[in-house]
Structures are given as C-alpha cells and as structure tokens.
Amino acid sequence: MATLFTIVGIWLGISIPMTILAVCLLRGGHDEDELPASPALENKPR
Image 1 (cartoon, one colour):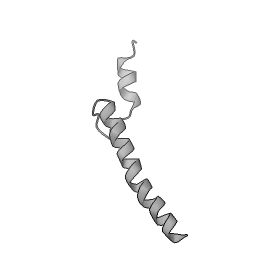
Image 2 (cartoon, one colour):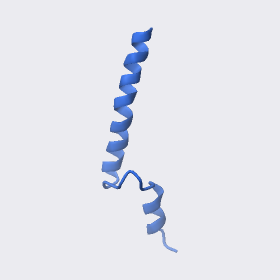
Image 3 (cartoon, rainbow, N blue to C red):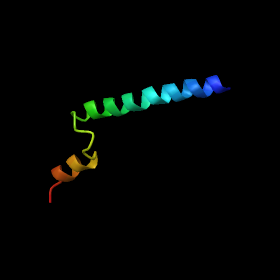
C-alpha cells in the first residue's frame, strides 16, 4: 500500500508541474507570476 502512495506521489509531483509548464507555453510563454486572466482583461475593449 505504501508503494502505491509513493508511485502516485511521484506521478503527481511530475505531472502537475509539466501540465502547468505546458499550459504556460501554449498561452504564449507568460511568466508564472502573471495571472492567466490578466491578458484577457487587458485585451477586452473598455
């Protein structure tokens, strides 16, 4: 049972940062500190 939790922990530890990195690259390489909503708010007509 402990081995299963270890495997899941390692898998989450790798997959979550990779997913975030992939999303950042697909959005155009924004900085991680920048909120995803800020470009949409800036481009919205006032």
